Amino acid sequence: MAARPVSRMLQRVLRSSVRSCNSGAPVTQHRPGEPSQTAVEELSRRRQFLREHAAPFSAFLTDSFGRQHSYLRISLTEKCNLRCQYCMPEEGVPLTPKADLLTTEEILTLARLFVKEGVDKIRLTGGEPLIRPDVVDIVAQLHRLEGLRTIGITTNGISLARLLPQLQKAGLSAINISLDTLVPAKFEFIVRRKGFHKVMEGIHKAIELGYSPVKVNCVVMRGLNEDELLDFVALTEGLPLDVRFIEYMPFDGNKWNFKKMVSYKEMLDTLRQQWPELEKLPEEESSTAKAFKVPGFRGQVSFITSMSEHFCGTCNRLRITADGNLKVCLFGNSEVSLRDHLRAGASEEELLQIIGASVGRKKRQHAGMFSIAQMKNRPMILIGG
Ligand SMILES: C[S@@+](CC[C@H](N)C(=O)[O-])C[C@H]1O[C@@H](n2cnc3c(N)ncnc32)[C@H](O)[C@@H]1O
Ligand code: SF4
Figure 1 (tube, rainbow, N blue to C red):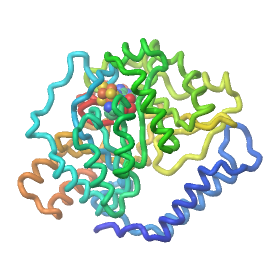
Figure 2 (figure 1 turned 60 degrees about the horizontal axis):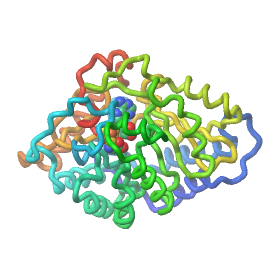
Figure 3 (figure 1 turned 45 degrees about the vertical axis):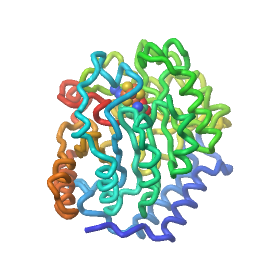
Figure 4 (figure 1 turned 180 degrees about the vertical axis):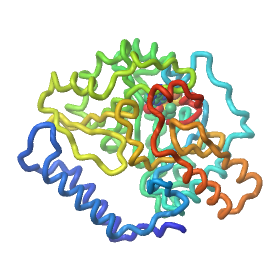
């Protein structure tokens, strides 16, 4: 069953409720650390409206637990101009031969199919998506897909300042920039390359061009950068950033161990010692982030708690790897090659059956951090975060 496009009226209501959630309008009295009453009511009104008016969602993208997958991440490349310790094994990764990677046409064919079925958000990732020579063209082509409301990119920021004006013109609507330290020498140690100032330039360019918030992804690792949490929060005082502290996750070859992981609760405690008035913001449906704000600051901070408090219950994400595999869970090793079926001439209906079967087999939740650490999976760079 194909999803009907979201009605104009629904889109208007969505936009206005998003505006009012982000409007910075005065909020009623509430306890510190709790979402304000107005914001909570607004969010629950919005959810109620969606339940009553949303068109039926594609059966192919709905799993056996009722989760509707409207968010697709597409990896544009396995290559990267950095070598982050937590993502890329020191010895590098064997790259897939070019002929086995998805072509631009194949990426767009798959994107079109998913959007027709109800995907309304696509994030381009990698490897480093901005090193793909036709990335601006891909964004422009995606922008033409009716029903696609958000086109985002996750980037290490190295080439962002140069490319962002073109990307914005092409229709890029959301940006996540990875930055794990504010100390240039430490940056070189973590990512095994130079480039700190380019990333900062990219962040400022994104702000200048009006992206708000600009999301900054910071993987927190004990002994490496957990001493910089407060400095990152301080950045949000004057800048419209959403600094997202990500719990360190295990992937093949990244030498994860439990002691290196700093949990959300521990990070929150550290922040609260400095800013006891830190306020919890209401959670968006399907959001993976727990968001907080220091009252009066322009930006906010969030935590991605995939390890200590997983959010599998509301997961709405699917991933396509650069070599064309559909991956229904970041921490699962079951994959199906859409590339092979496409190249064998599968019809749209056949592709949908294959996608539907794979989504249908998605597990209720991941197996827990210790099992994941033991499990065979791809290195993160070959998945696309
Ligand atoms: C794999 S990268 C790809 C996009 C781009 N190259 C970048 O770095 O933003 C996507 C995101 O995954 C995050 N990531 C990579 N390895 C991780 C790990 N082991 N634990 C948590 N996050 C990780 C990165 O910090 C980045 O924000
Ligand atoms: S996290 Fe991004 S920038 Fe770092 S090695 Fe992985 S793909 Fe490259």
